Length: 291
Ligand SMILES: Nc1ncnc2c1ncn2[C@@H]1O[C@H](COP(=O)(O)OP(=O)(O)O)[C@@H](O)[C@H]1O
Ligand SMILES: [Mg+2]
Image 1: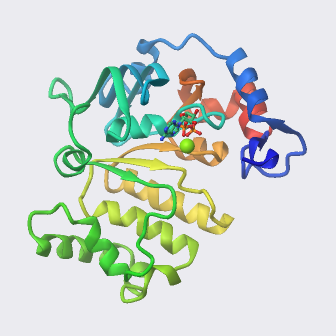
Image 2: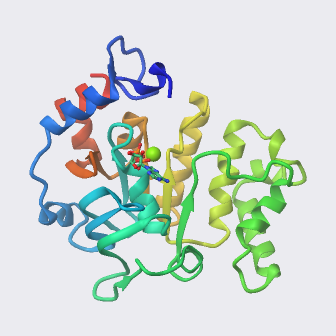
Image 3: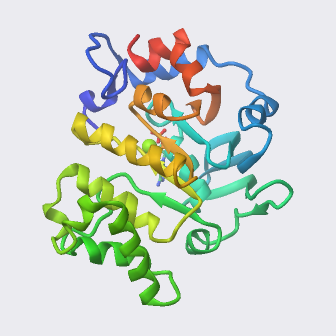
């Protein structure tokens, strides 16, 4: 990693005109210093005491290395939650843990309404997608460049019992996004950055998931496409009723979008609140919003 890569603009990568540049290590140290005592009760309250996705006392990591320490997280149905924090804090690792891409040492991950909760920690990623309704939208490079747009969508339905069902679901996606329909016979590699992100998101929609795990939807996009992507996600939350758990390096955009925000520091939840409240929080502003 180059010295430049290690340094993070105080406002996040796309935070605007911020002159101060501080290292990831300094952000992490300062963020740790402003950490609050976040109780599980506070987090449940933020989810209206009716969580649909819950993480309880999760310790997880890679191999024998523990990255996440005693994480609690709650998000209600049709709510959105954005994780922000310094590079390496463990934000993506939370999404990985939910989808089953890493090692869970202890704790529980449950989804479902009310008392109807189901522990999903031991399910395979494919059952999570097929049975539990959880989709993981990767940051970048997950479309097959040599395949057409429609072939990419059909791939999104590879877990369906019948190929015809995947094609049907793909048609629904095309009805919803004419922009993608116009490009259906084109190879994915000729799409613009914004269209490609739309394809990544809509490929996940082919399985009609309830929960979308979205890692850095704005990364690598030109500003006009960033707004488009957040509009798409807002529609999926508000119109289609999806529950969204997002990681976003562009903290301002992420917190403006999401109902709730957690600041993750060194594998622990340091601050949690409504997105709007975090935008007003001077410590969050100084460290992550370039304020
Ligand atoms: N596949 C992996 N194997 C081992 N360590 C990993 C892996 N992915 C991430 N890590 C480590 O886990 C920590 C948290 O990473 P990550 O969750 O990607 O952070 P963030 O998304 O907040 O930037 C980092 O120290 C990183 O080096
Ligand atoms: Mg990450």
